[in-house]
Every structure is written in C-alpha cells, then in structure tokens.
Image 1 (cartoon, rainbow, N blue to C red):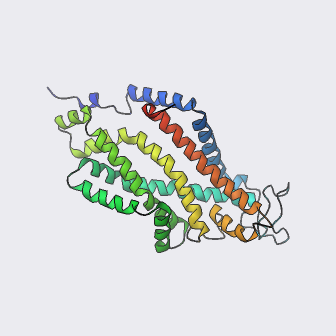
Image 2 (cartoon, rainbow, N blue to C red):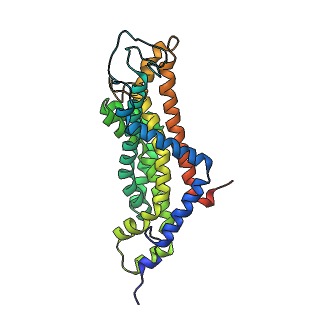
Image 3 (tube, rainbow, N blue to C red):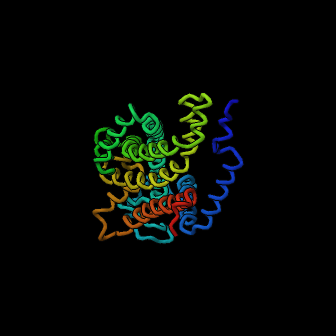
Length: 297
C-alpha cells in the first residue's frame, strides 16, 4: 500500500487551510490594536503609492521667497530652508522609506529562507556552519552592522536597502531554522519520507508552506526596523542622497533650524513614528491571530 502524502500534509490549499485562514482573519478583526495597525499601514502605503497625485507641489521645486514658512493654508506642513513644500517632501520621503523597507526585507527573505531551511534540516553538516555565521552577525547590533555595510557599499538608496537587508538576514535564518526543526518531527514529514519524497519536495512543498505564518510575522516586524534603519542611514548621509526626498535626510537638514522652525523636524519624525508603530501593531495582531496558543490575554 502506498502512502498518500498529500492527505497527511496540512497544505494551504485544502479546506482546512482555508478554515484556518478564516479563523485567523476573525481573530485579527477582534484585535483593536491589530486593526489600527492594519488601517494605518494601508493608509501609509496608499499615500506613498499615490504621492505624485497627492503632493501639492514638486518636492524639489525651490522658492527662495518662501523660506521656512510656518504651516498654513498655502503650505499645510510649511516649507523648508529652500522654500520646498514640506507636505510634498514628506509624501515622497515616505515613499522612499517604504521602498527601502520592503526591498530590504524581501532581500533578507530571499537569502535567509534557504539557509534557515538547510540549517534546520541538515543538522549534521550545514547547521554548524550557518549557526556560527548567524551568531557572528548577531554579535553586531543591527544599526551598527547596517551602517558599516552602507559605508563600504557607498551612499545610495539601493545600497542602503542591501545593507539593511543583509543586517536582517540572521533574524530570519533563526526563525526559519526553528520552524524547520519543529516541523521536521511532524507525522506528515515522516509520511512524505516513507512515500519516497526527496529533500527538495519535503523542504519546499511541506516545510516551507507551513512556515509562512512565522515568516509573515517576522516580515511585519522587520519592515519597521528597516524603515528606522533607512532613516538613520539617510540622516548620516549613507542612504538616500539629496535632493531626493527622504525622511532621514529631512531630519538631518532640519537639525540646524530646530529652534527657529521646529516643524521641519516634527512632521518627518511623526511619519517615521507612525510607520514603525503601524507595522509593529500589525505584526503583534498577526502573531496573536496566527498563533492563538501564544495569546496571553
């Protein structure tokens, strides 16, 4: 008698998988903080996506007759030291921050997921090497590692995303390794092995799909860290370069004028706080919705 591997595997395409997703969505809807985070994330993403339509002026347009104007009906968030509209620059700066955040996390996922799977499944040969590499990278604080890599690669938006992404690789490796170690002992994995499935099928058809929940939570936690990392790198001159709008560049430019024009730093700072808070709230909500056993309320 042959073993029906698919029947024993909790694949995402089954009715059980759809039922689990439905229950997770209901739990998320009952989580006020998670819903606030979701709404804020959607609003921020829409504002960044439609920045060219929402911006009242060209973010690079200089007007020396309107230097450091206070917020008013003519300029809702005021103007900067070159007379540029702050609202327009905040919208395009948010766009840069979200782009770097998403790109950095995607890069980290592409690199870390195969390494984490291999480390958790091939525990005798691959795991020691990957674990030592991960421990070495984790010995450096996230921002210190990102700043060092950005300094080596050179200042640019793409290099900032690469530096932040590489800095996030060890955290995702640890998550994927832990999930692989846990799932490798499940009965459906034993059934797949008994049915003659090779390692690639086990890793990418059975283990990886059932690790998506943990990976999704890690991604929502990684994006706000990447947004903060981009702001720090741009503030230090290692990220987005002027005149391209960036929230970190705006904070750096506002520093000498903080006493005379505090709104120059206030609004970019509030957007950074809102973006990081939104993704963190959404990440907490997803964790509680996807892992109800860890819910401690």
